[in-house]
Image (cartoon, rainbow, N blue to C red; front, side):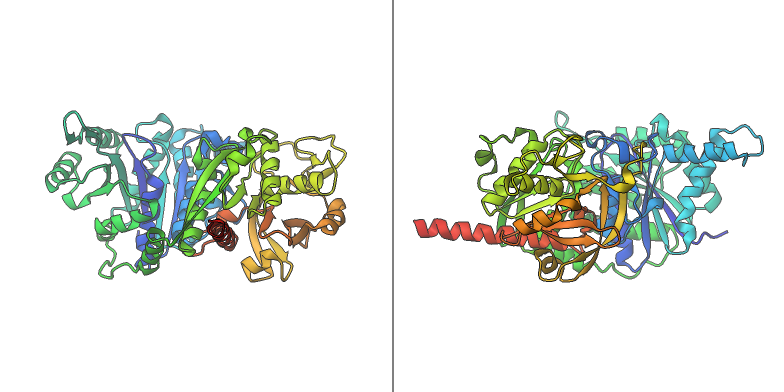
Length: 547
């Protein structure tokens, strides 16, 4: 029986962090550019129900979807490449699978049977794998399997793929295996043995990959591709070279050159005569590679040792930089390193300062000090989530004169709680999935800096927070020069604060970085980079005049 969608599984071998998410997103982009409707989902083999409770050092950024799912950061890549929102259904973990099966067992859905990994866990995995395909909205569902073939925790997923390949047939289901071809400098050659062993392990688990995508630092010769195909049981055209690229945004074009999409369509019996229309993508790459300007922007955070903790923010600057024909250089600054004496040195020369989101007290005073430096020195500033809350605290302390002002998250006993716990959060004890999550509407005051960035009054942005601006202090703030320029009218929640007298000073309670894509760079990042460019130009002019 033919499936309503074609299913493509992307697995990894030899080593982790080879880029399954980028290969999945690149293939999806190529299929989308040929006119097909595509979605991508990620299956993660850890026991956490979702990444929402994971420390960023453990797992990188927690990416939030429109419908409020806390998901793997690869979903951010999917959205940035495809410009199509993902949802709760696009990220599934082993924890969620087991939770569902156990709840069914408790309800008696299995009619007293012994509940086992096969068939009950694998059946639930297969149901989740097919869920988006059966919606009728997509012609292709690409599923990235986290981890590496051979991991114990990945076995149920591999077994589920084996069963689906049998059930759906080769024209509706296929497997792409991403592997590594290391270069041994002592021998002066590329080695295929790790890939052979990875495929052999895959075969032992009952799955023959249809396509091999080979990560490599050097080009694969025709002879080497033929050898890999021969020993891994795939034809030569199904051995795809994936050389290291200047940026992740070059990968779709490299995969087009290798004809990955054409090989996929051919194997799945789909038309492939049309060439993919990548004109917008190529225009973005041209702007990215040919900037006319350069600015340096500081990112103040407490997880900067792991750049993936701020992945969407970094990518948003790439999108906004290309839009402005500007190369944005990021200076990563640890908030714990910021003390009054070190601030002028650590922040000198910056054209803009972004204070990143986060949780907890560690590094909070450094963030507040950086914001004061930006405010008093007319440096363009963007505060996101906790960054916005820190801007409110800084203004309360140093402009309103409320020297003890704080958030009740950091100091529950502060006598000036300018940031406090949301009403709906006060009786919540569980941490996972209980914050204010997902997209909420916001009305922007006409004529404000935020309005000039968005060019519209009604917006919708994604959130992930428990604490909010305390409206009891709103009048004091607005009288002293900090305005609430964006408000969720249903809840009366302040979403955006800004200082009109400052060249560009905006704090937002939401996460604009989650919605920035190649096709639609986020307007706040575009305007922030533009303001940083303007400051850089003014500084240069003053320096020239002084000479």
